Image (cartoon, rainbow, N blue to C red; front, top):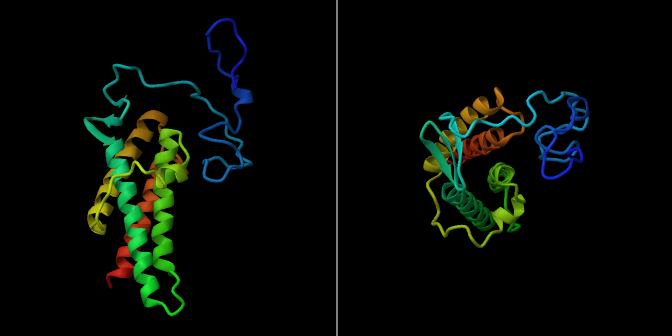
Length: 194
């Protein structure tokens, strides 16, 4: 994707060639780029300065004004979402006549998928590898309200990071996927706890 140069120099692709390269692959589901997206990149290759206090990227977390989302927090959220899905499926199978999970567990499974997509997008990993990972912490059935509060806080943090880095919140980006997961959990709370 770069122009060939001597040595290790990097020369970015000219702006007119960068159509559809923003945040993913065109036409790939979940990558955040539509197949017919014609918007060009104008800030390609611009990253925050290392001594910029606004955004600091470390190995294990993103820091914004002293706030952070660590890999351990992300893994705990993934594990808790996975535990919620399994518990809801178990509960719905017991109650149904045909022993099949219902709509509420599907809603939670979608929330797990959205959150896994967000984390995978940030870590450049496969979402299914994250949700099937043996490295997720073991958790008991979590409190949905507490999980929802953590995800809503994470949405705010990630939205601020996207605003600082890209001067906008990215449609189909990390913050949008976490927001979608939080919305589905909120919907489940309203439906399940009537």
